[in-house]
View 1: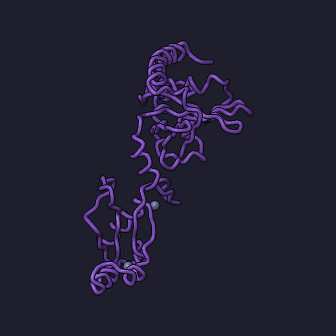
View 2 (view 1 turned 60 degrees about the vertical axis):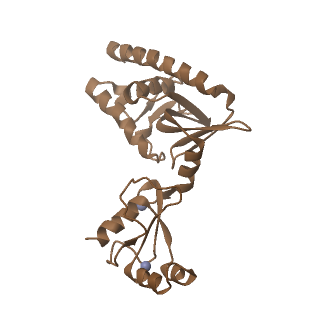
View 3 (view 1 turned 90 degrees about the vertical axis):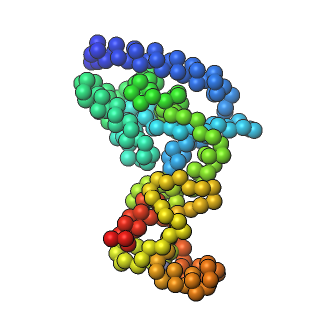
Length: 249
Ligand SMILES: [Zn+2]
Ligand SMILES: [Zn+2]
């Protein structure tokens, strides 16, 4: 049983969302885009036609299973790896404040209207420029779109993102094979860095140990020989800064 209070709240949320969604669909001519692709690592939704594409940053809100006729909130879904799914927890907190069961339980029986109902509520609480749903197999995934991302920027984000076993999707960084969080080896960098910093077009986060620095100086800058000694490998940005913090202790 849903309370009168909830039904009223939902009604308002729907009304506001309806306007936003109408504007979104006409502004971007969303119905012209026949192909969709979303990537959990970059949290980008790409819509395309044969000759054009458009990108949006999304927050996963939840999924509706047409098979079991159940709704699952993204924050409850362990196969959803998007970092932004935690933002959907604000909806749960709100539900707890108000005592709205549907916003609190992670998984429950529902009907096919659930997705848009919860997108409207997500829009009310989190903002955004529109909603989108995609259907694959027996699952409809509902996303709240937060902003359009320029195609060039989107391409760059896709290029620079890796999925770390420990930290999930993250920007990539490069370190020499000797750096770790067990033995202090010294920490040399291409330029002073901090987490989340904006990088110039051709810059990457790059670090190497004292031994590598000696090699680099000996070979008068990086060449094949010193590069081979360094054995540069790829890590995620969080790993990079953990190693940095450990080495600068
Ligand atoms: Zn090294
Ligand atoms: Zn990592």
